[in-house]
Image 1 (cartoon, rainbow, N blue to C red):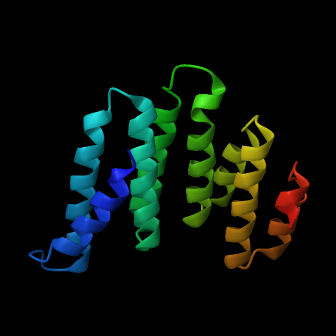
Image 2: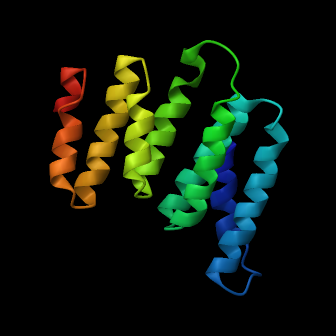
Length: 154
């Protein structure tokens, strides 16, 4: 069901009628959100769609829109009813995407709240990699020392 990312990419490429790249991205964003909202009654799928949209936006350098979309995804993840494992992937992916848009504090905060060891370490590893890319080596080392699983330290 991760068609949102492909939809957004296709729209970004195909909206040649718009005047500027910014306008094309904005139109594609609204179309992708409109499609994702069709799943709004199922927070599990809706939040995954929002996370995918945010990742594509981050890849396109649209950090403000990505951040806005991730904050919406955080709210939707909290609506997932059921055992904690149902939202593990969501929380991990939100933490990773937040790090990709430079929201390191929130990313770390969300990752550290993941109770399951492997997903927490996975998120922290990706946050540490994003910190290295951002030149924050000391913080990346601090984060790497929090990995609960040794193989993520490699």
